[in-house]
Length: 150
Image 1 (cartoon, rainbow, N blue to C red):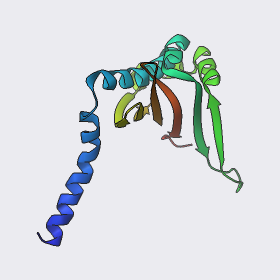
Image 2 (image 1 turned 180 degrees about the vertical axis):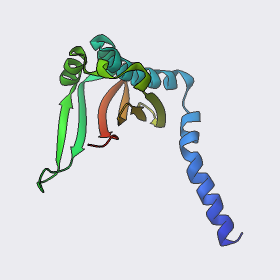
Image 3 (image 1 turned 45 degrees about the horizontal axis):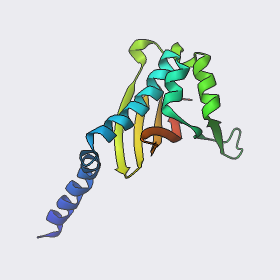
């Protein structure tokens, strides 16, 4: 094989990895992971704290990297499960019109009891770490980024 053929093969293999990771997941695990991500998104938009709580582990860590203001240092802002549920209870997600709501779930990887998911919502992306605990998939970490202009 020549160098061009090897490069093409390597690229094809690299691009197939996420699909291969998803296809090797047991259907019941994929459904549990997807359900946790959707409970998180749908609970936010509906203002349903019980639905959000169902998705989260109580020790959730949700973080966003924020640029420094006026030349200051960048910072990492943190929110726990209780703060997130309180935001849902306050109805902040209900401010998103139904036609603008997005909840695109992509399972990026699953190994044993750990999963990584990309969730595209209205104006931001959440990268979720979801763990199987006592047979249920729960979100334990979220790193998110705003996708609309700040």
